[in-house]
View 1 (cartoon, rainbow, N blue to C red):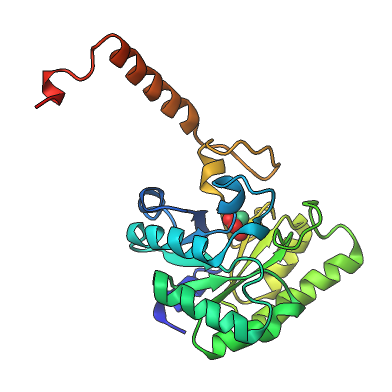
View 2 (cartoon, rainbow, N blue to C red; view 1 turned 60 degrees about the vertical axis):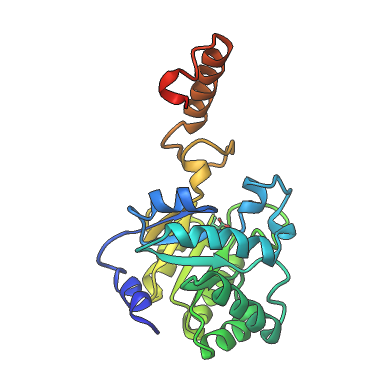
Length: 257
Ligand code: KIV
């Protein structure tokens, strides 16, 4: 395990871990100042490409966006999602994870699932590829986006999976839409940091999709808090530009050659 990852794990129980998504350099360079971890999430499929699910996101899309993000991330841990159908067995996962790491120079990859992906995770880690796990709602295979952990049987599986992922060697686990007391129990029982999205304040850190945070992506999920309204600012700027151009107020001599 490299020092960056070791230092990240050490944050558990010391300070809350801050994480946001980025899909391009300019956003990445802003959020990097405040984050411990920048995630190139496959949520880019729905956020940027209006796909109905993340299933259509390809390895090449993740690699191209990650190359852009890499230029903006200087201090945070940079993690890239392995998209759907790129880690169906250990051999496929290793070849694709190596491709992601070598082309994007990211620090780690993230993949979704519990027991089913344990062998895959072990293979990647054996090959020195740091892995972040993802439990709870798993968008790459979810039939619906209902929160997880209401039923006892489901709670047991997610708790068991968190231990399996920890034992397999993940350095952190995203908990997506997991019931609060279960997220608390998992966070207490594993030694690696849990990063919640819709999984309560009890997680070691929080992650949000940046486009949701800044009001660019119109989503009405309970777990989203909008901290800014960038849509309004872009709209106002475009409108002012339009008015200036229509009235020949732009460009002035100052902006001409
Ligand atoms: O794809 C993504 O952005 C994610 C986060 C929501 C955790 O996996």
